[in-house]
Image (cartoon, rainbow, N blue to C red):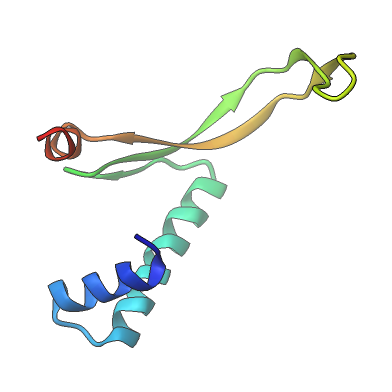
Length: 91
């Protein structure tokens, strides 16, 4: 499913026009992005939790040359699905 099909589904299920559904989806994505950028966790009951996870610095290898290299510490967005979502997908 891509963004336009998701907007169509939101429009149909919520009884909104396409423009309103797209605005709602953009607002949701923007709010989650801003919250994660500020270091907050976003929990949507029955769906899951979005959070930022810290990755420690580590050593690795350059895949092209095989040379050892240091990979810097970083932060990455992560999603943990709720039990209800896991159950819906597994049935």
